[in-house]
Length: 438
Image (cartoon, rainbow, N blue to C red; front, top):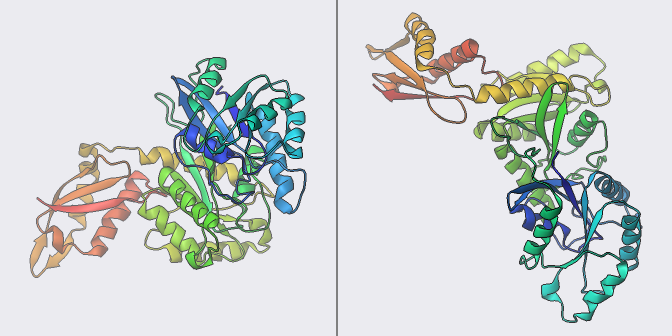
């Protein structure tokens, strides 16, 4: 099992900056405003050939000024519980605060390895401020600067000395094994975090009825009911004109990046409001990035009439046309309806994306169909297609060789796409068809 290392401390001591520094890229949102990080954010770190998982947490507080403070503290304790090693980050630019003492008391009660990490030494003018933090009573102490990396190498050396090298890694593809990455996407407040919490049967991510609760894109390994995948909870993607602050802008950008880095996207749609223009925009982002897609009409327990469910499905099919070959499930986290079924379908789509059809089989199936239903004459000229093959791309792309490729109508392209989907089961997968001169 991969070892877990959590970074904890009060707000604005540089936890997310250190997290990004150690995993090697900007995954957590960094901002001078306190309370930006809310959920536990996971990232993979490799140092000297040894793998471990890093957890970024929100700033601990004992004063609950809003709905999120209590939930952030819950995530703080969840991180302590699951961690093998804890990095207690402090800021020596100020003297020890009461909250620092409170966190140290909590940590001293744990039977776990604790490192006191004194951050922002590059900004420190009085070196005696560092020694003051020794009063907190931790034997293992490290002075670093998360912004420029000073001292982080020594810190990592010490971490990996404790951990034995492991072959299991939850956040990357194992050797000879493909682990699909499924992104849960949608508008704010459609139930993305609740869905993941229900699947995991624990409060993995913070949930509230306030839009914009989830800010970072949060990854978690899922292995149940014969399913093995990485679930990615994302921030709600809202219209540009409704984005009011930089933090929310970066949240949306990370959500879009998660779409690009995923294999399959589960697009949640509110069952009451139905598919709106913003849902269609998100759908098009997924389609344009050639990712597998499943539509989940969420909170279906609020729909009392089953006849309305059928109408809603038909409306959605009409809106997303011409790419209508998409699985649609009516889901409910409250009733746990169709959650596992939709995940299993997503896994099938993820593996189907990797399918490469032999050229001989492709021609054997498609050419008789093309010959039976040929392209109509153009100015008395017959349009012929003699050969086809699949291109060596990540997503399914097919090339058909014709005598007049530029004259082939869109309707005939859709006909060929429809037949490809029927014969090779590309449901939920955007496919591209190209025509070239023979």
